[in-house]
Length: 139
Image (cartoon, rainbow, N blue to C red; front, side):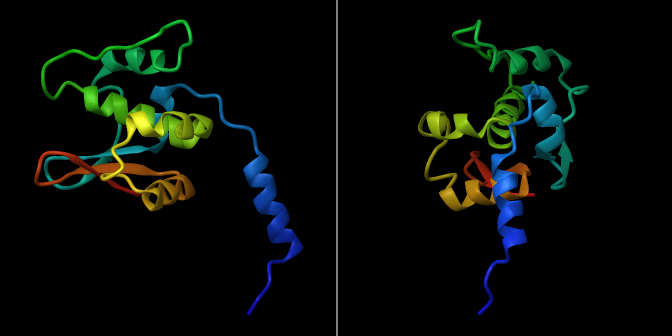
């Protein structure tokens, strides 16, 4: 049995006390979100593919707005924008995670262990499953 050293405890405490990053939702998505492609691979979220979704994504954390509504045809980046917001909450604003988890997350789809793994690794990716819903995968 080994015990934690004072150095490792100090590092862990310092890491948890570090202030949150002040970045936009779209920047958090670029850094931390990977979306699965139709070919079975995955790629980082790219704002050049849906440049019209960057501003609505960034408005999700703007306190001047009470709501942001995504309306549009299929396959235009709406789900990616919402997953980008989730990536932002998990990686850049973890205080929001507890506040809105009950509203944003389906507890049958995303378990506490999944959230813990995503928070620990800082990476988030989602894969389509047979019933058409999305399944989280830490990447």
